[in-house]
Picture 1 (tube, rainbow, N blue to C red):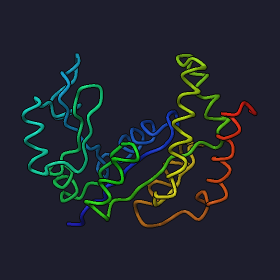
Picture 2: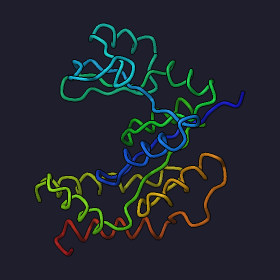
Picture 3: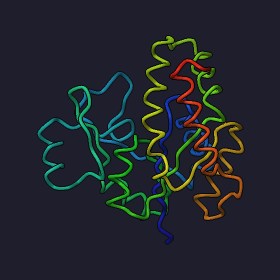
Amino acid sequence: MKTGKLIIFSGFSGTGKGTIMNELLTRYPDEFCLSVSATTRSPREGEKEGVAYFFKNRDEFEKMISQDAFLEYAEYVGNYYGTPKEYVEQKLNSGKNVFLEIEMQGAMKVKEKLPQTVLVFILPPSVKTLVQRLRDRGTNSEDNIRQRMLQAKSEAENMDKYDYFVINDSLDKCIEDVRGIVDGNIPGDLPDKNFLDNIRTELEGLLKGDL
């Protein structure tokens, strides 16, 4: 049986990473699955063990750390979150392509442990478009949006470390591009260095108040 691929999605806040993954899972359920993380936080209403998360107490989680049982882990607001190595490898060995949505630091840790991991960075068509999408949600204050753009500026400095870049403009085109990457039929119109530089320049301008 052909081994699946681990695909990590990262990208600026608001670029639609979750939407892309959910659409791929809906359209191609036999090909893709989501990685399930472990956490020490308490389950919320409706969250099921092994579906939303693997819920662990702190001792259990720290024992897993000592056993090198995570591809990556981090502590956030007093709780641990991590990607269990055994779960991911089990899914890959069953032939499934596994999606993992994490930030850059975690992505680099996973790539170090599993060099065959495919790193995909999701980009907006432009920073202006991204800001407008965040405003259109109606749930983000201007201060919150600015904080997100500050974070995006920091992420943009290291996005060259990713293997592929996909623009989430048309969802159908985005899905097609990701499938091409996973299948090895790399689309010829993916963003290049000039596009990345333009994104960085836009972010600089935005944070200086030029946009």
